[in-house]
Image (cartoon, rainbow over all chains, first blue to last red; front, top):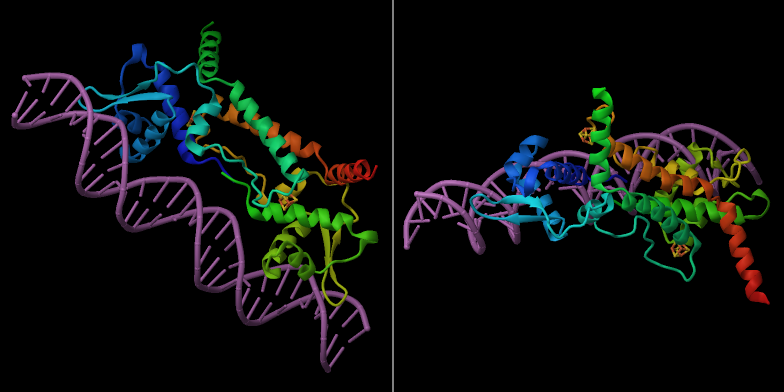
Length: 137
Length: 137
DNA sequence: TAATTAAAGACAACAAGAGTCTTTAATATC
DNA sequence: GATATTAAAGACTCTTGTTGTCTTTAATTA
Ligand code: SF4
Ligand code: SF4
């Protein structure tokens, strides 16, 4: 059981776009180069982020990707959900009435999810800034 | 990203063995039949549980599996770890110094793990007993 | 010795993830 | 309108991990 690499790529891309000044559109080839990925593969991942409403895309010359204006400070979970989906990690197909195994596993999963929902990408950017400031002294 | 079915089978088997009176050894064919599994496949799973020290096995006639005497009230996490291993769910191979993405993902994962460590199989047995008692009234 | 049972390993089937290539559609610029 | 640019979509391959089967070996009891 692992997070897919695609989730990693999605997080990096989101963070990169957040640092991009004044809503500048960035092409997939630039984003791919930065992560040493093939552009077509990254394109698929970005399409998922677009459909999830986290970023906006524009085709054609001067097109590319930028953060969705409509987006309100996405959390780690928002990004992960866009890539991994929101199916339960533990999913017994039988679903016996009042099953305590499922209940326990779901609750543990919720604890992870809650942490990921509470952490926003912007928090991480802020932490990096503070770290830099502290080092400069 | 999903828990493997093997984890589910392992949990069911452990719970079954905990209900077995006075350390009676149970054969793999009985355990497999209960879960509608092939005995040879379940056997592999049980070998993992044995190596993890959660159960004891004995070959030969009158052999089979029973809870390890040495075991002290295993948690859900103990069983899961025996099957899934203990690698991190998010594992970027690069490991940049002070990476905040990894830090965030690890912390979330820890929250799930902590819940699973806190919950023991015996807790679940107790809950079932209490539920039955409540219904009997 | 014979019957029983777990362990080990080779192997096959399947599913999901990772990645490539090609075609299509939308957009800007000239 | 023609051309260049760029995202989206789909078919396809490759690899990896999970699931499962089959056979052989080793240990134990009776
Ligand atoms: S008891 Fe729970 S986990 Fe087990 S088979 Fe029923 S629903 Fe699934
Ligand atoms: S920043 Fe963190 S997650 Fe990103 S490549 Fe470096 S170590 Fe990996």
